[in-house]
Image (cartoon, rainbow, N blue to C red; front, top):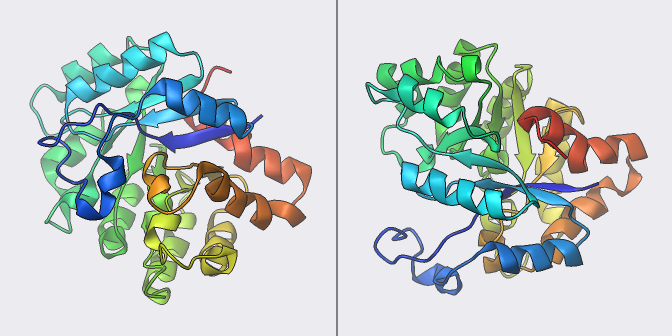
Length: 277
């Protein structure tokens, strides 16, 4: 079994989706389940986790409706305003949707490097565990310091770092990112998605060797028990096909045991997100 733990759906809106700039013009269209289902089938993927791409509860409901209509969508990572006074009421409400597994905020876009440490936001995060929700950490390397303190503050809360914290692969920067990711790996409540690497590399000249040092490091830091595959579809299409993106990890894992592969491809995802398969 194989689970894609990180992909997106949207009906393209040029106002809402302003982050899709000219360099990403091929993403300026709708990306919906019918297209992904065919892609997953062609690549031997059994299910996926749909992750929010817009910061609204409307986005959460949009993904939940898609998950209701399409069985291959095994879970949803939505959005709520954790800083709001009614955050607990909103989490209680969303706890009534079995396919809603967790939440995410697009922290990478926040100008405050310490956004994760803001008191109102942290207060909202304290509520997650009582409802069994996970939290996806979406950051750039310069935000890893705050993220480390953040994750350390909630030792019983399950966190997963999206896209290896987006290391600067194209530029070849490694040491600062590596030091903080190693510290993250020491926290048993933090997991990491093997996703989003291709868009951080040279879009025209990447190979498996472009990613090997970064993969080596997260495997050393998190082990095979806390890593999981994600495609970042359709964003990955900026750089390559779904098959090429999956192939990076297939090649890298070629020497791993079947048990280790099973954990990376599905077992860890099922455990982290409590997926019903």
